[in-house]
Image (cartoon, rainbow, N blue to C red; front, side, top):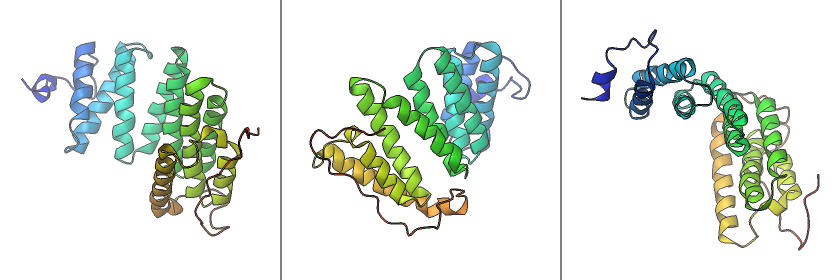
Length: 231
């Protein structure tokens, strides 16, 4: 029996079902990229009913919400994806999983930026970066570097390459060492991501710096030994 057949008796608009059917609906939605309207319908069905039938912090609910973020985001339904991100952030905070909440905050910032809500997107990333730089050991490096590079991409995507370069210099201790393979990969990825953002973002950008300066490549720092982040 296929998932389509198993789920056929359920009215997606009204049904409230058990855990197994919700899980099946999520899996079905994730595998239906070739039928976008069905994919979205089952993702909404799973997310809505998991919130009703399970707790907000139940793993099934988290899976359903994550699927809806991905599917709605790909289909350009950014407001819906942003709302689902909010549910995930709150749930992970409740579960004491601050680092997982950070991942969804970063996802929400990307969605906000793509939707032209640049101020909110950058404020979200500033919060992510402030939290990540307060972590210890490898967590600081992993989460801090990810937030920093994303911040640089979104700033540069708004045309503010000077601020992006300044941000990288300010937090240079989060970056991989100059000359390392990790640094080369990071620089290449950031350059490619900025190029992709600039291709479309100008149509929705609300950042006050947009158009105020020519868009030039951001400059990664070459730090002096022992230099520390400035607040």
